[in-house]
Image 1 (tube, helix red, strand yellow):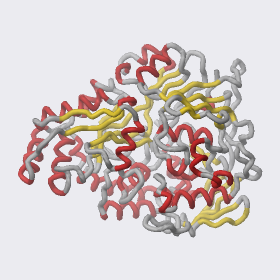
Image 2 (cartoon, rainbow, N blue to C red; image 1 turned 120 degrees about the vertical axis):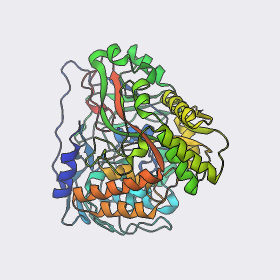
Image 3 (cartoon, rainbow, N blue to C red; image 1 turned 180 degrees about the vertical axis):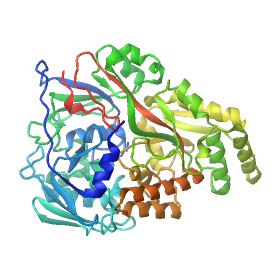
Image 4 (cartoon, rainbow, N blue to C red; image 1 turned 60 degrees about the horizontal axis):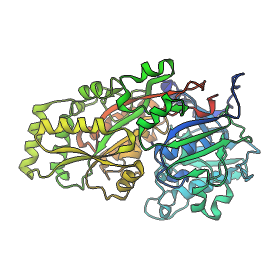
Length: 535
């Protein structure tokens, strides 16, 4: 989903070797001086779609879903999976998994959290005619089809608290995926009217919506503590109010004025000052976030061999070192691959990675070769959402391309994230556009499969390469994590040649918190652990 040193390596190895998760999480106690009824205010953005877990693949909606739902597992601050609804997840072959869930759990309306609530939700998410954005998360389960409505035959309800999952091929990281929102359960009441449910979702997590009208579109959403939640993320506060800011500068001003408790995105205008402004309340740490822009092959001049040459030329015309230093004040690191340095298996020495290095002469040479196929016309534009603080880097990247290649290049702003994403999702956008990835779970596959596999839900550029798909499938089926990562690295070498997206940099999470809150931690994926915050 959603676009960020952690103990991820140990987690990945443990999942691959043990292939089982069991146990329960401890619960932290609030500080003695804190008010357990206090409402924590945080920044966010208007969700692109109604809040249905299998149809939410962006940060604004994901942040809310993760607060109001409990999955089989959740991830701790370092990305370690911890059982939440699951009592155990076990397998002998990385193909068939037996999942036991804890008894007597309920959604906030009293519906049981049982095997059926998972199996029915997953089947809904996978059904082709439902066109769910995260349907591809179920493609490894037997019975899945992109082309026709089929039941996930690999899902079997054994009893109220036990179900089995049979995959169509081995997947060593399957248990690691299960903390992602696509795998959340849904209450029986959701099926009465799933569209209405998406506007007022009923969950089973540490928070719940604060009654009818809690979601004030384009303004905020108000959540309150779920007193019946029994997992390891018990809220140490009374609730969470997520404010949908149109401008990060406004959010930062509210933070400085103590009108906002926690902010997870510092505006670029404050990069040079936020650490001195906030002191020990400033956050600047590595996270599993990759940033890029995508140039769809369907755009004029970007199909076939001409398009490949132009993508490579544009990539080599970007001075990433200068931009990350000048624009981002050292809060970004130039990319050497399509994943993240905090994920096990990351490499900075892949074959073909020189295409990500600034090289004016080679960029001009490749552009000239493309012109021989079809002379360039028009302006190269990069679309971005103006409410996300992207103008500075888009302008810098555009100027770098313009200066090196001698063409017109500029940013193309859209007022909101939702507006930009709608055009991208509908395939009606007519320019290149900002993309990126905030990891759903701590594994290399998560940066590759959802974004570049043929027909994947977040494959916004409609990229397709059979050799890449083959390597991706091979890595996903490996039971040895090192062998899997070797396949994923080889798959990335194909991406470096085709450039379905142009890697830019890895992002630190930069944020901060107000004077009246304590116990603020930002997780491996850049999202604050809201349930731990006290006030």
